[in-house]
Length: 209
Image (cartoon, rainbow, N blue to C red; front, side, top):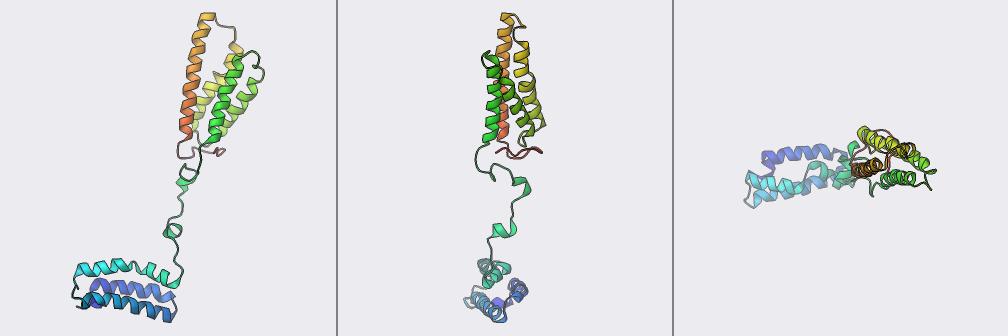
């Protein structure tokens, strides 16, 4: 059996003829001749077994790719058949750089409670608290649970509690409550920072990169 008579070769050549119909006649004829010569070599060398034919067909590649190369319109496979998936858009792999704005928002919320704790700066604490809370609610990288936790920790138990509850507790109790609040604020801040690196958007809102 010659190389061109092998069933796998005939099937491959039929696909090549179909794909090559888009080429000019002279280019199509030249391509077919070159391919037939290479396939016929398998039989002439006495290695006309199935594995040899499969090997030479693998070396030639797919008829589609061969015709594309011959026609001069081959494109990189990633651009042609593997466009970016929707779920990949907005991921850390697709968007370079750290989530700087999320870090800034967490820092702003922590700053607001520090300002509220100091009598000299308590007057400006509500402004930082308000801006930070709004930015948390607008974030696309923090989900509803993260936003609710941030609002509870900083929006309810943050500046409002510090300003409204100042002097209401005995000294001993205020120390305990103060330590508990500091631990909570730090724990929530670490949680929000960790969630800021989650590789997907959580919902509608600002894309905070």
